Image (cartoon, rainbow over all chains, first blue to last red):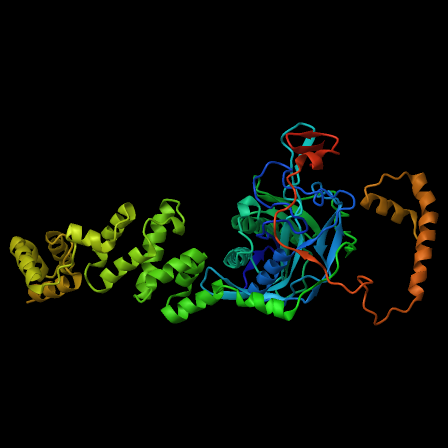
Length: 485
Length: 95
């Protein structure tokens, strides 16, 4: 895709974006303690003395979380570091009682990588991954329960987070949205994060700057609190306009943290954060460096599922699907699995059309997920088979589909019960056509007189008389022959 | 390296410790002495020497991902000055 340039008063501007995504790691227990990570429990019931930062408590690293981070790194085509170091990031988070966050700084567990994003215009682009590191999540505070007090729940405090940092390769709001969607898809395929942005298990910070095309990088603003793909796009649109206006008025961008306010659709400065970036990192003396072997990494690599982009390319190459259809089908693993079961030994393109246009359309209308589909993949496959072998026409198939969707019956059963089998007997069709012609002498005359459009009328009448069951190809052929005599 | 009053005030602020002007001035000399003492370490040539994480050669111990801790709301709230319905209650901390 051509770089999206924004036209200002004084010329064109290029948008430069890098993203930091925090993803909660799927694990039973926390990063450094044996307390549960389950969502929605009684406040402070999933807090150990380690999480509460009681004096003398020591962190012990969760082996499964390390495995999840390595798995994610491999899924992002990244270099896995054999040695990584946990460091203390010193800052007083209101709901992290240690007074520092255990994170990774100079030596993260995962280094450089890249992912492919799919853009709305049907092209793809590579976005570099700078790093992935492990760190502790903070707890949650509630400020609306009391006029002068805040309520603190530390259940989430100490849960494992992966912070995934991208290179500043993203060039506009659509690319940012595509990046976030693809990243979420990969994490879900890998089973390392559930990706639910509305529950806060995936959160994005967006670094935005503008520059003259090809010029020096501009000063960036970091936008926090953007918690949906749509909000990311809106926040970038707003921020880009704000920065261009300042620069074109001869002003300067201040490097700062800004908060996205979804109720006002604007970003605003978070004052009082001037010292926020003086974190005084140092290696955590409670934890030794984490050392992992190449064998360990290779063992995890062997357990990786087929990832979204591999699947997408396989669907395009083996099934002849378009990039768009493939992208829709791979969006979720259950959806891709469903499609493959339908396409199994059948017309793969026809199967893709039915899954995307009919099934996903119907499910979407009912606000249902593919896993809740009233039609199983085998049943939809059965319908495709009936279309492919000319037992029913595509038009009748839509009625059969609707019946399957509401009753859960097999396609073949419905076709039998309702006698919907396509009539391919040319003699029978010819007889019906003769009737139609005999009943409509005026239209026949008009057609022969040059009103070509009336052809459709005859097809319609024939279909009506056969209850839609006549094979449309045969009807067309016989009608043409008879009328053009 | 020498410490000035500005640095003392900055460090105090980062540590959320309230320090008066007078106290900050007193501290300049004290901190300077401490840093001077520690700075003796820089006399040792450490070029090409790997940083030492531990004096004994052991690897980081990991634990299995099992839930075997927590579920002790009473204990973690025991020292809190105030709590309501299982929450810590603190002075309002939002801008």
